[in-house]
Amino acid sequence: MRKETKIELTGFEMLEKFVNQSGNSGRVYVPIEWIGKKVKIILIE
Image 1: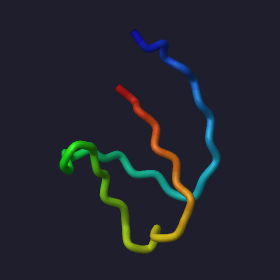
Image 2 (image 1 turned 90 degrees about the vertical axis):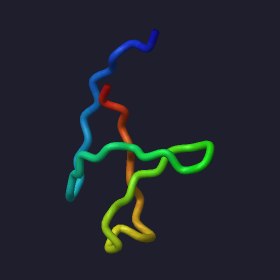
Image 3 (image 1 turned 90 degrees about the horizontal axis):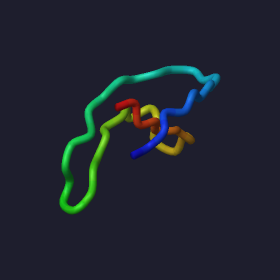
Image 4 (image 1 turned 30 degrees about the vertical axis):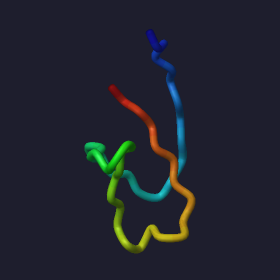
């Protein structure tokens, strides 16, 4: 079982989305303006 961890981040924008299945992995769509930007994905449940 995973232990919950508190994480603090400073950023510019936040989205809350569900991960969709894509073949043998998952996929999250983000705005086209985010292409080429560094992002961080955090599992919240």
